Amino acid sequence: MDYKILTYPDKELKKVSSAVDKIDDSILELIDSMGRIMLKNNGIGLAAPQIGIKKRIIIVDERAIGANSNIIAMVNPKIVSYESFYEEHDEGCLSVPGFYGKVNDRRRYIKVQYLDLKEQVQEVEFDNFLSVVIQHEIDHLNGILFVDRINFVEKLRFKKFLKENK
Ligand SMILES: [Zn+2]
Image (tube, rainbow, N blue to C red; front, top):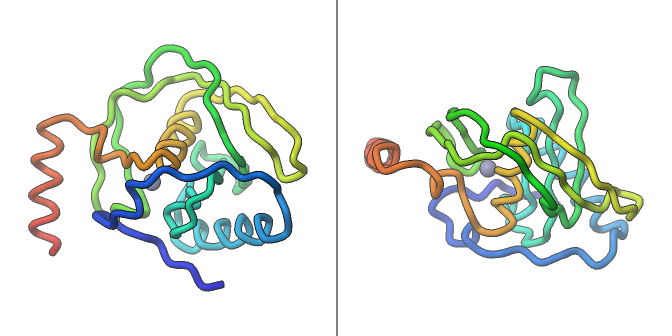
């Protein structure tokens, strides 16, 4: 299937995605497509709703932390615990192309529970930037974009960016 990345202000991006009941061939194919789309667009993370599929699936690439490309797929991911805050940093998003803005409420450490591709429950800890990428992707499942998390000054800058890039 031919998917395309939805971009701001598409209302579909604001919707909450539903849990996946069963990881069948169609889900595996979807995850495969997501991987291809992410790599093609040079992304380091992608959530299914970004390509118009409102299912709770995210992928992240360990390239985000300077490692070789290794895609981690998470179905129904849930943050079960977290600790301290990550430093203020610029985030970007394939659904908000060209804009990078400062986000300062991300956690430094998270523990995530999710189903892997064999439908096994995994509970894994992540820290620093990979943790931030996962939080960003899980936000997509809840209809939240990073531009919803930027401060007032950054929001003004985003407005200006939108005006200039119409
Ligand atoms: Zn994003």
